[in-house]
Image 1 (cartoon, rainbow, N blue to C red):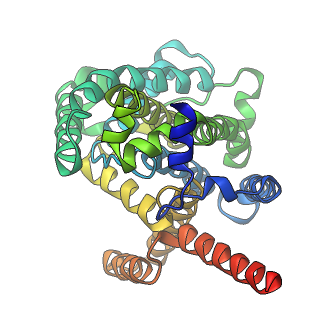
Image 2 (cartoon, rainbow, N blue to C red; image 1 turned 180 degrees about the vertical axis):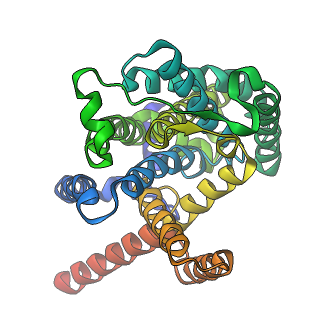
Length: 341
């Protein structure tokens, strides 16, 4: 059954890499380039903005794991991003542990929260799944707003410390050093996502996305796999949210509001769903664009960003990265065919 399923998913799908045609050399080259760009980012971009790009990129990758590879559109992922942000802040403030441990604690809480939400949500599909996740996210938002003694209500948690033992003074003195101190957490999350989608587990998710009835007929527990993907996605979103709150030194209700879920879905679609690299490209585009418009003092930022997003969606059918990748694959096939002829 496993071999049958792998044959089933090794086909060309819109927005999804052709697994059977991936060349290891190209894959490792792309990974190396991506790592170099990530390491060099704070040298060319204001370090706090670079950190935001990294956090939002991992957040978008977590959504892509559901949307691009499992076919589940979540409008409630802000619940995990925000819950981890608050949990990370509370752990760092009250326990004084190194911030990586606080971030990991926030990610674990996000995963625990995702278990009951995922169990109740994955039994729905399409827009119904999206609405159920949105409803749960709104419940979390309401709880955080009312539980003022813990969350600070509308004021949020402020003064979240960046503790890292003997390096505390260094990373607090310059955001440039904090970027490299927090980057391993982001890279670990990206590695987990990359390993998941390039494994038999990832192939099962793609098969479930394309034809859940056939996957079920082959003996796979579709709901269980969806829950596993949902919890893993929540953990990655929590990891990103924890880093984000530590970077900014506060956690607010903005991290839980439904527009945060909408923003990360937009980032994922702009970059290209089912690619993992696409969400990172989309995050860089959105964060840099928002930062530049905010710095310019222009009041109609929403009009400009909206117009740019519309143009990108119309011009790049499969997102920026997906369209570029598909074009490159088509060009390589054309050259190969010309050479064979």
